[in-house]
Image: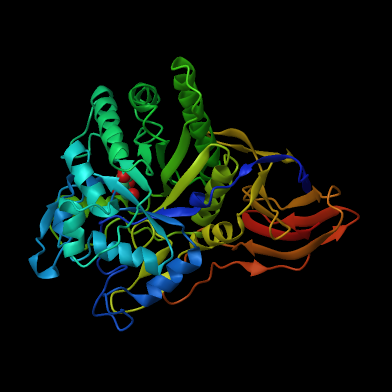
Amino acid sequence: MKKATIVIDSSYQVAKISERLFGSFIEHLGRAVYDGIYEPNHPLANDRGFRTDVIELVKALKVPIIRYPGGNFVSNFFWEDSVGPLEGRKTRLDLAWRTLEPNKVGLDEFYHWTQAVNADMMMAVNLGTRGVKDALNLLEYCNLNTDSYYANMRRSHGIEEPYHIKLWCLGNEMDGEWQIGKKTMEEYGRLSHETAKAMKMMDPSIELVSCGSSFKEMPTFPEWEAHTLMHNYDDVDYISLHQYYGNLNEDSSDYLAQSDDMDAFIKTVIATCDYVKAKKRSNKTMYLSFDEWNVWFHSKKQEQDITQNYPWQLAPHLLEEYYTFEDALMVGLMIITLMNHADRVKIACLAQLVNVLAPVMTEKEGKAWRQTIYFPFMQASQYGKGILLHTLNQSPCHQTLNHGRVTDIESTTVYNEETSEVTLFIVNRNIEENIEFEADIRRFKTCRLIEHQVLSHPDLKARNSSVAESVVPESVHYTKIEEGYLKTHLIGASWHMIRLKVS
Ligand code: AHR
């Protein structure tokens, strides 16, 4: 059996892992909101029309922030339509997904929902069809306690206390041709600078995210980042990254190697930020907000068919990915990659949360259930708290079609000083071979195994459903600690969480 080794030392501390690394995203898209989180006629709906079974599944994921209301949707969103008495709400056309938006769930309702799932809102402003003025009006409505027009409008809707939303996105994917109100890099650089400047004048406590490229393959990447940051470097706190992966070529080894692409993407954005920092002679470090990441490829045809041939529906089945076991491994690999960049990636949002590219699915009038990707995300958000440790890794490799030789084992190690725990998250992305794994933990005086949980399945294409959740993590009992070494094996194609009590 091939062997991988790792050396763990609590003094090799890289950075505290931001809790915001385990954020998510709800867009007014498909069945995310209507027939997703909100279904007033469902037997389990609460008095606001939100499904309590969905709330419970989301709460277990422990997402600290939820990005809202888009995505592409935000670029033609008129937030005033979504507040105030329900009877007066207008139905609008959503051009991004060519659907109807009834505005039954709006800003105030969504705020209450985020409270129910113990999360903060990460709000996006419309810089597609709108600009500085409307961003300011929205900020006043949400965050100000003043005796002024929009703060009073909020009060007139029965909401005395401001929401104090801390995190704001300055538009969404503004370089994309599909975006309503796409901008050139010069236009976006200027607009984001002016919007950020004014928003911070109104509320200096907020944090702002500038739009990076829509994905790494955009022809203007990374020039977009460099150019726009030259305009807004002093005004914003983060730059966004978005990327979705998929097994388009039906080659699982090559698919699972795509986390190396994510790693390279992050490194390039860091380098670009640091180039602007140097050029500006600045002392400020720009942080990264990877605020859309996931697997997205299964549902593309269906989505094209609906948006082109069956437009203007209310809550159609859009972007409903039915995730396989290998997709869960890919999600695990992406989580590991994000965690290993904890010094610079301070925000990340799994896109999305319910029904749309989602870990949680719902049936109308029926059950809510957990997809395969739910589990690695849940384990990481629950136990990925603390300090990222730099570890010395040695992994055997295997050959892939487009990524050359890649490591079999990818891992990240977290040290939680408060609980005296060390947690390892590991993926064996070699789909054919089991790997012997040994961690040198001699630097810890004492070390006890709390648990070793594994997500594995003989069929890479296995899925969960409302009837059966067959892809779920299980505890294994073959892992041992002997004379300062943790010894186990990692079966081909598997996700692992190993928790240790240390002193
Ligand atoms: O998450 C789905 C879509 O993907 C978002 O609306 C958009 O920002 C991205 O292209």
